[in-house]
Image 1 (cartoon, rainbow, N blue to C red):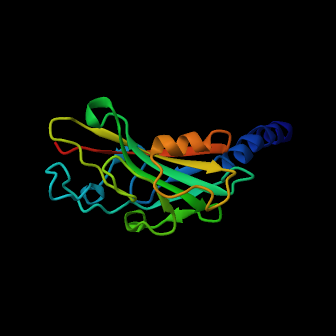
Image 2 (image 1 turned 90 degrees about the vertical axis):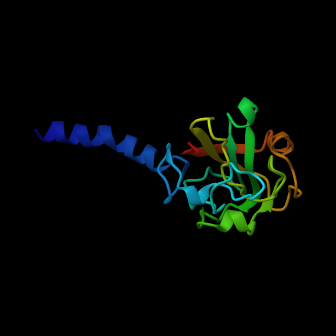
Length: 182
């Protein structure tokens, strides 16, 4: 019986150790693949599909890969713009020492360099799916890089940023929030 117990403990130990070191991104404001509260939706009076308060959700992460010097955070809606995709946030030059953004911080545009999103702003722009377009998935992707903070200039689009990250990405973590105006 002792041998069986010992073998079981040893068999589980590497899995537990491995799971503890996985790069993860999560939120206290929503679970992965859960619905986002309306307050996280965009707030643009000229767009009737922007029905929220444009408050960015809290995001936190752990176990960044070894050698990480800065982080990049993207938020995209792959089916937005009738399938062409919408980039809601491009944030980079985030120090590797950081492990979270509190609720609303990404809307304020502080403590990161803002890139240009599809609506043309340099900070978080919440979901604005048109009525009749169903449930949209908002992908939050955190990328660990070996680039020092300040290496990347402000105002890069998602495509420009990704081109500059080639050869510098060390790993990524993601979480998904869903939203609809139905």
